[in-house]
Image 1 (cartoon, rainbow, N blue to C red):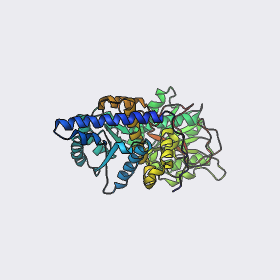
Image 2: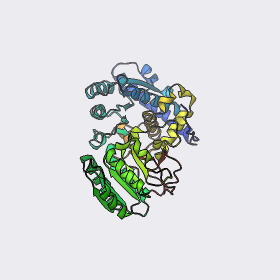
Image 3: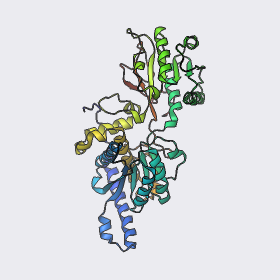
Image 4: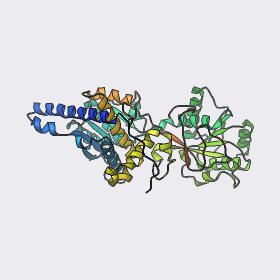
Length: 430
């Protein structure tokens, strides 16, 4: 499949980073050598052994493709850093099962790996994390969005290379602020538990940004018409409206906005992602609402589109996808390595290598602390809880109405991703 992302130049500091990383990897091998020597094993053989990186993922069953993507991305990360020969990659199949993942993790820690990445299914990752944390093994979960992985973090050596499912309210607030400009903001929710929770989280995030919603309008699901609610919204003259709810009600509202030629931005959530009518809200002349879909980064596609939403929302992801595409030495697994899980796995390896190079001889806990500093150009920083600094949700413009200026830059056609954060934006990375 063609890929339109272009590779960027390598950092001038790259040779020094690689040399330091190789030295650090040799020290890891030496420490393994010493422990093996104590067990009456040959230190010479151990010293020649590369550092072990274990990729754990489903390699069988319905999610096996995810495992192949993570392995391809990890390989690309090692190739991209010129360290393939210094690492031994092994793979384990956790089948996305928590009990199996725990048993595998116990076996892995006995091998004293330098790094474990993968466990993309939340129950397996959360269960295995306890084993790795107890043994002081560095573990970076790939694509796990469940908050509990880091909210109830098993220990300081546990990290997440993914967004989080509990940050949709923050993302909605940023999207609303970016779309509304100086005009009012309205939140509409259909009174379901999901909608109330999202509406409350968005309202709280807006208050935290000192720009509270101007109006919150509840409606009753399954009605055939929402003329009264539409009139309330219209009277508020909003620049942006969040609809928290489900497709049937959203479609009626959007049709109502279109019939009134309302010049506003309607922000909807990933509950609408498969609702085709939401892509046709404007009338044939382009009058009517612009629709912005908040899509979680796990559902996005980096393939074949220079405006791919994850890549546009995160320059680091864009750069990683581009350099993976450009490398001939990973061409055999190129498509797998450019998928979201592949790119996340590559970033995990490159971030770890950057931390290693900057902190040779560090213990796993010290190295874990260094991961928050993103010492290499290719690295992604992690926060104090172990969460990677990448978007949890991205805003995708679906159906522009009248041409209008966006504070993040112009949006010229449908299917174009827009930033949730960046220069001049209203908030940070949600």
